[in-house]
Length: 501
Ligand SMILES: Cc1cc2nc3c(=O)[nH]c(=O)nc-3n(C[C@H](O)[C@H](O)[C@H](O)COP(=O)(O)OP(=O)(O)OC[C@H]3O[C@@H](n4cnc5c(N)ncnc54)[C@H](O)[C@@H]3O)c2cc1C
Image (tube, rainbow, N blue to C red; front, side):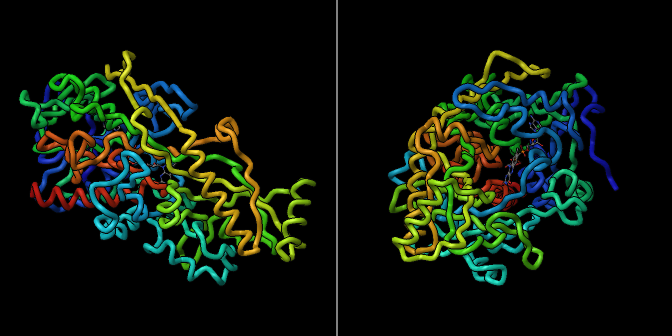
């Protein structure tokens, strides 16, 4: 079987000329390469790392964070083949219709196309991430044998589901690590070369700034050479893609695609506050599929309490996926509140159980939550990044409204009650972590003044430079990004086949 190429063995000053260069071998880059297998394109996938973690390579990702606490930039992602899927959680869920819509209550919202455009790609993306059949909300019809759904009646919150990536044949039941899982498949593709240890350090434009001329490649061992493709796709993750565009500022002084000062802005992640509320169920315990991953006909899933699109529209709230975490013991005040409330409702709460709720919620798009270059340089001479992280009070109150709706529904259904555990900004911030779901930094928009890339992921103004990944998401939804970004990448593969083959 052919092997991967090693950039450290390429002579200094060489020029390689594939039809298409894919920069980055994470789930986006690997899915694109797999989707273009056996096409007429000669493809070179350039990956910074190797098959394994290496501290010196990982250090290329280090940067600074200011503003509210965020995960250090060299801990929130991994730099070797497979990218951050080498440590992802494997949680999958498709974006919903409203996630694509332009909403007057959400400035900067809206994708250049609706969910229907991605729909044909979801089942294939689902296969690549190795989750079960593409069934999500409809799982509600199948789980009854494992215990009834939480009674919520009609309202803005309903029981929906995550599915989980399951690496086929992996004895440890890990989610799919794209590098290791697909290495053999990539090696078998006749029109593809994968080159490891190949860091792209510059996207060099022709003098007219309208086309990409070549890529600068550097290895940590000191080699320097060029790749001169007909077209290139930057698939280095939402943070690094912005860095590469911004740092390539020799022809366009503000950086490639940054003529309207948009690259690196609108950074987003899913906020994950812990113990946001205490949920009390009056009658017995919740089925275990609410509190942990369960398996049904080989499909790994877990229930979540999702804000419906109808509610998001009418109450003007953003997406959130509330999870039921561990059981908790009620204190005296809590016990008294349950006794009093259930008796007012005429409900039997003698077997009540209580749970802490967690959540992943969507942030409002914010141009000031952004990545910028600093004067500090990495070992290859690339400027390091600074992330200015923000979260607004509106982000918290939006989710609080959804929790209040959940509480209202429980009371109306007489099935339970809810106590909110976080009210002030300081409360919310004290229990906050992040999904490591980087999005938004190279957003799509049909109008070049409002987006870095067009609806096909092509950088506005540059004929042969494309982007892949969740940096393209203009609004984020609450769903985990990876299966969705793989679907978007499969769509890009179809587009490239149309325009290049
Ligand atoms: C701890 C953790 C848990 C997560 N859990 C989930 C989850 O449960 N569900 C979910 O949907 N998502 C999850 N994610 C997010 C998920 O991992 C990302 O959405 C996904 O990996 C992004 O894919 P990508 O291909 O766009 O980028 P990446 O995975 O970041 O891959 C980018 C690739 O580009 C390479 N590269 C970078 N710079 C260069 C360069 N200059 N030249 C050449 N190559 C370069 C990197 O080495 C890497 O291989 C999690 C992330 C983390 C960190």
